[in-house]
Amino acid sequence: MRAHHRRVVDRLVERFADDPNFLAMLVGGSIARGWERDDSDVDILLIASDSEYARRRPARDFLYFTRDLCDYPDGYVDGKIVDLAFLREVAERGSEPARAAFVGVEIALSRVADLAELVGRISAYPEDMRREKIRSFYAEVQAWQWYVSEAHKRGDPYLLTQAAANLALFGGRLILAHNRVLYPFHKWFTTVLREAPEKPAGFLELFDALLAEPTKASADRFCEAIFNFTEWDLPPEGWPARFMEDVEWAWRRGKPPIADW
Image 1 (spheres, rainbow, N blue to C red):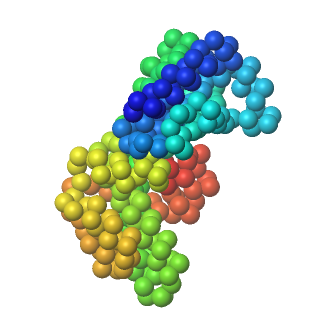
Image 2 (image 1 turned 120 degrees about the horizontal axis):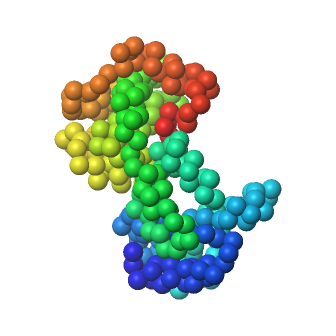
Image 3 (image 1 turned 90 degrees about the vertical axis):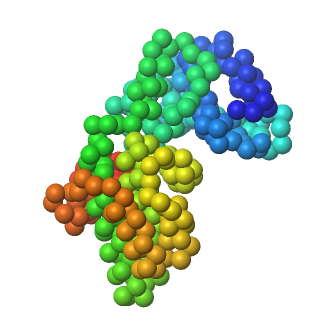
């Protein structure tokens, strides 16, 4: 965190320290992960009291935004307002992007005794789900490789674009699952992929090439690198059946969409 970001955090703490409507303030985003630029915003999460959260709920008043605490060009504070029940739900059943938002967060202000333990549970990789994630993501890679081939046969640029993007997404998700790294949603996806310690040789170059020039050849090279990387735990029912349940029948599951799972 750079000095001007720290000044803003200190001012925020001063603003909310004596406000009984808020129990805690977490600092996250790029400045908490070491990915910040000089003009990065300050991302915070405000934990509201039950009464304050209930007051805000009818109007969906869950966002906090201000520029008046920032003394650097283009600076602003971007915040979300939740309650403790939200944190407990994320710890119990949150999607990976929801969990990833808590990786590296700083507890800047707290009147919650067990907040650090709760944040730790949220930001831990869900080990109990890892095996099925790997199986599902592997099936997605196989499925979208097939769709790239179909797009070429049909001369369908829409299908080709969708298939290549999904192939890159699930190939990357497979590598993150292998490394037990939470998927942070699209904005920081390539950043965490770059930081993942174990991945196929030249993986990021193949990833970029697939997106820059989506062809059957670039898709096959990308997939070959993934398939040969390690002895994957494959879906025993085969990729078509796994894909059908994860994508075509996703509406039947009480889980996040497979892209966020």
